[in-house]
Amino acid sequence: MTSANVLTQLAGMIASGGIEVVDCTGTLGPDTPLLKLPPELAKDTPPIKIHRISEYDQDGPFWAWNWLELGEHSGTHFDAPHHWITGKDYPEGYTDTLDVQRLVAPVNVLDFSTECAANPDFLLTIQHVQDWEAKHGPINAGEWVVLRSDWDKFAEDEAAFLNADATGPHTPGPTAEVIQYLVDKGIVGWGSQCIGTDAGQAGGMTPPFPAHNLLHANNRFGLASLANLSKLPAKGAILIAAPLKIKGGTGSPIRALALVPKG
Ligand code: 23J
Ligand code: MN
Image 1 (cartoon, helix red, strand yellow):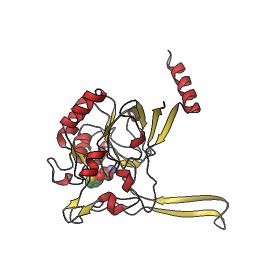
Image 2 (spheres, protein in one colour):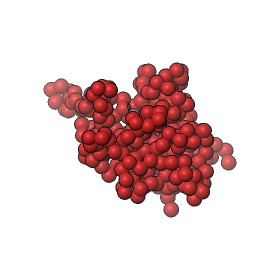
Image 3 (cartoon, protein in one colour):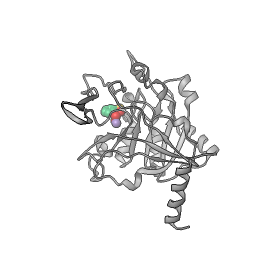
Image 4 (cartoon, protein in one colour):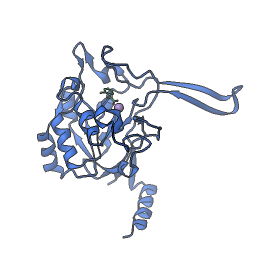
């Protein structure tokens, strides 16, 4: 089959609903949960604001439009390699220079939602991934890997989503070893349904924030606050996760879309 035929067939399957487009994105607005860092360590990303320019009124009689005030790392979003100091020197590590060919790729959905519900500090290990691969098949180079925690069930409630107490945030994520294992396999990137790609307690790991550190050191991408992973199969879907082409950007909100075979 030629590539043109494949695309024609794909378009037909999308039009008929034989392939479903699943929205893996949370709503972006003033109530979207945002990362809180210890104030002595860092500045926070500012609140999201949607400002009205006009809505068929004296400021624009026939049209409605808004302007936005938001950090790059807000809501369902993309981490580019330049986001982290370990990835700072990649010329193609910015939102406007990255290779878009890598953004459309098969996605491995690692469902550990039961474990995450039982333990918000759940950490994914190499053993978990190898057990998953024995059941579902190997994770390959050029693919996305996402942790299904079903954390999007908390997305309407920032306190529940961040789940912080006096000891900091308690949300699931990867061990350093599992990120290195996946990087060595050649994945394009790693995604989480929590506020960032790392676990809540990742600031105390070695290295600190290992998903950020190791993914970006190796020119790989991160995805955060993904939604609706419960609608995806373990294997077989294609994820499209494209950041805005912000000049020198370190990340961007995305509309994450998955193509999912039905039936
Ligand atoms: C800056 C510092 C720490 C973290 C993050 C950003 C993110 O999670 C992010 O959005 O990239 S953990
Ligand atoms: Mn980010």
